[in-house]
Image (cartoon, rainbow over all chains, first blue to last red):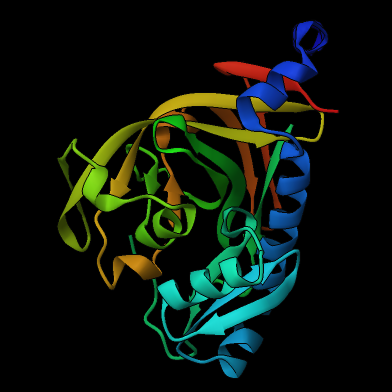
Length: 99
Length: 145
């Protein structure tokens, strides 16, 4: 832990901004909120939007549509950044995922 | 310490949020990764790839992978993937496999594979609802504001 503390003290916050853009942590927070929302409400979403794509931003469904491309286009039209939006196909009778 | 979590309405799958960057394509966005010790490398699945703006016709490197679904085409690309514990931002330089775009593939989550997982010590307890991740360095570490 001591090594890590020293390493962090040496690091430049400006460096993080340059490498990963401003507000990197804000993006983590907003996306995390959306991911937690979907992970805890997947059944409800599937019942409401069955066999559709949904876009969840900052913890709320902001768009839905029949195709992934349509949902991304709707996000852009609403000036919501797809890079920090969770987009997922919801299907109440979908197959189990095995990898 | 980084943390993952179990998604109770997604069959309790273990996940962690990351930030993915591929400067060569101007790609920089958030991805929810399935923690998958069965995957040799980290894979960006088509729904995330399309959402982040990957243009498949610009991917020149090609490789082949195999899983339960059979063989599939992968497009390996250098990438950076970052995770945060709210104190530091831990960045890993990886070769990311971008999975070819298929209808079924679009429904699968991106996976965090052993290229990153094998650099971590992970305490994984579903009964306690905890996925605690101890990093042992990273390729880059930045302090968080």
